[in-house]
Every structure is written in structure tokens, then in C-alpha cells.
Length: 127
Image 1 (cartoon, one colour):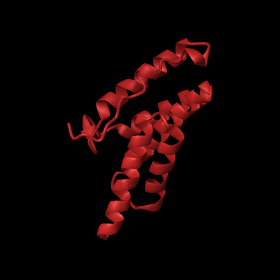
Image 2 (cartoon, one colour):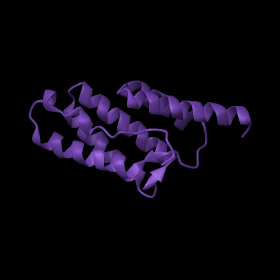
Image 3 (cartoon, helix red, strand yellow):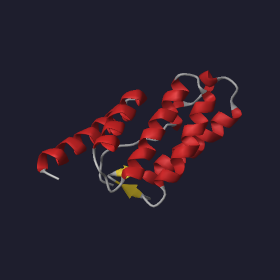
Image 4 (cartoon, one colour):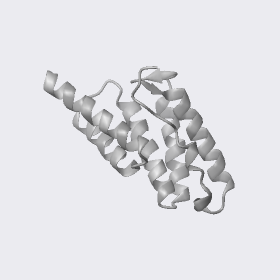
């Protein structure tokens, strides 16, 4: 893999992180999907988990409760083995955010009652 490809991969990852931080979940999914589908990655499962995480919260934003629950449940196992921190992301925090979101989603009737503070806080900082 050449240096240019490495820069592109890092850029796609970071664009996904930035979009997710800004609750632009569809865009985050798109950046991470480009990374996942266009490159052979040693951590493809982790990136797939991020894609599913973003789509899960995109479903929340579109009032698709079943879709949100399904994707958030599906992505949890993709983060196994990457705790506590991976690629500078707090994977334990991501997992906790997923758990808290799933708990609330199982209780609420109206998707407008979703607490957006439960979305995992991710950043690119090396912790």
C-alpha cells in the first residue's frame, strides 16, 4: 500500500468521525463505507461496526425504531476485541452509549423522546 492510499484511508476515517460527532450519521456511514469497501483493512470488522453504528442513529433520526434497534444490536459484537481504545476512539464509551440507547429505545413509545445525549461521544484523540 502506498503513502497516498494511506492518506486517503486516514482521511475517510477522519471524515466519518467528524460527521458522526456532528450527528451527520448518513455522511459518517458513507465515509466509513467507502473506506470499508474500497480498501483491504486489517480491522474491517471494526469499521463495519462504525458503519452500522452510524446507520443505527440515522434510523433514530428518521423515527425508524425497529431499524435503529436492529443496527445498534448488530454493531455491538463488531467492537469486541477492540476495547478499551482503538484508532483513538473510546470503544468502551461507544459500547456504553449503544447499551444506554438500546435501553431507552426499548422503553419509549415516541421516537421524539429519544435522548440524543446518549449517542456515544467519539473523538480522534489518542486517549
